[in-house]
Length: 114
Image (cartoon, rainbow, N blue to C red; front, side, top):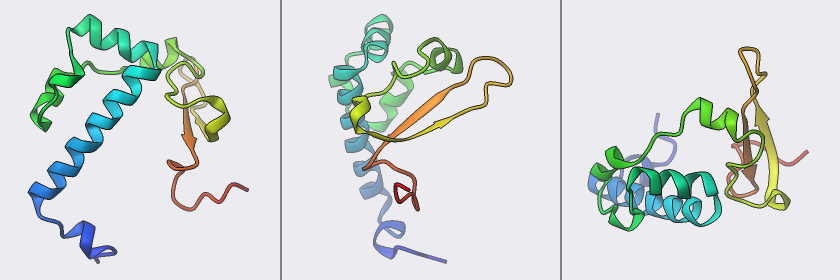
């Protein structure tokens, strides 16, 4: 079943273009607001302005579960805490919990703020 034909049936090249645009926005955002990513790019020799295609994804450093734990709880958030409207956390049963925060714009579908 197709819920949104305009998006779900979009030509593949158009999808790739949107993905690349959103990747560039994300890279600039985390580079400017999250010390961990700024250092990670620098340590890996990555200049985010050199990302020109989706094939450049392979040059970007990974973020590991250990990174999430080391920067617990909120040091990987790219938005200020005043903009965070929802937090999801693991239970931490195998170690330290990990946390993900959402702004109003990023909130999961169905969340109404109650």
